[in-house]
Image 1 (tube, rainbow, N blue to C red):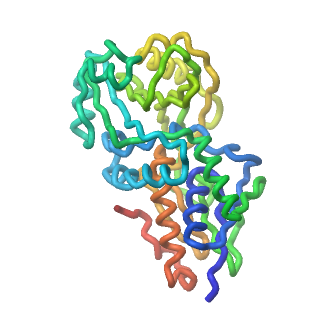
Image 2: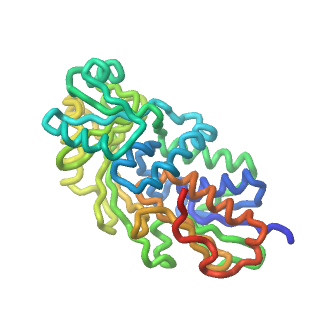
Length: 339
């Protein structure tokens, strides 16, 4: 039987990763996106871009670290802008117990003292007594990474058609991979949105080479360098499905936490404020679900760039199974996949 063509709906990190993985395995693929340009209405556009499986292990299920470890090599092979500089976690002396607690919940780090912190990040010299350094982690610019995936898909002959809604059903010679994120709640009623907010600032007076996490008592903060004096500041995770601009409280908390990391951020120029909804299932882990010839790939939560490669592999493994074409049941793919 001839292999069906695949339509991937959604041009965020999940959709583009799935499309590329499928194309690399020899399938005919097309991507459709209801937005009118790359990143239009896409929560991936607001992401931090941290490939930090062991930092995330401190507050997530162990699967996240196991699956996320795959992502660093996957992105390094496909996006030249992937920076393998590790991650740094710091806390003020009064919050030293938080740093110790963080360390007990994770692995693949080493402790740094004051001079070693300064050697790694001179801008933080004298500001923190101890830190955790995760040397195997990485980060990337999400917008550059999405553009790189789209460019590679174009070189492979995969079209991305914008302004197109998700098809109600797949035709007899098509398989649909639904990667619409929170927009797929019309078909996935247990999917919820978790609001995330971020600030991008320009601060020529601060230089960081890697993501830095500050274990702040009110709002654990991460700052991701984007080059040319730009920094993305994030960490809000609000159980709310409200879309709309960043709240004043969130902006103040993010900026005050950045100031606590380094006072020079007090003079930074605000370049962008943004918010969107991350799609999550009740267990906060990604899932595949099948309904006939439609395969739903969703639930990346706040781990979009970290777990998208694993989700893409699951999708490609499922579709390239020899018996996939003949299967039409609703429950033939486990709803929760483990490493």
